[in-house]
Length: 188
Image (cartoon, rainbow, N blue to C red):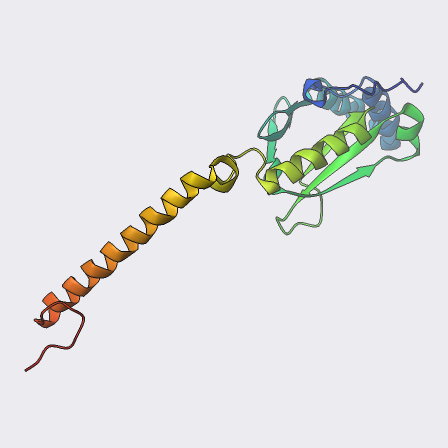
């Protein structure tokens, strides 16, 4: 039942769980005993409405018909990523990716389930999480883009600005105390 995983998978193209997740849901619904039809219907509805979106900002997951649930996490908020799969999920080739933030809750904020490529999704999320923390998506610092001559010119301008601010401060202090403005105490 295991479907081969392509090594060049684009995680951003994943938007639905694998159909094996419905099989897993129906197997799990058997645990409801005589309430199997109700549990199976609820599981089927969850499977039919479950959607994922991986974009430049973060991960979004939504599901539900009567009670719509929508969870969005940015890559910068992610603290930890766990993989989980029980015996039935492994038999079906599925796994879950659990995403945790620093919210103080012991359970995962989001659980992306029904994936054949769960290890690749984990690696993708780790890369994005590290990139969000290191600021690789932002503009590079001035020292990386400016030449040495430009940096010298900026340093000179800062030095001149500092001198002007010091002179202004002395003038304001002198005005407040009634002195000559050279930074010395006024004579009385």
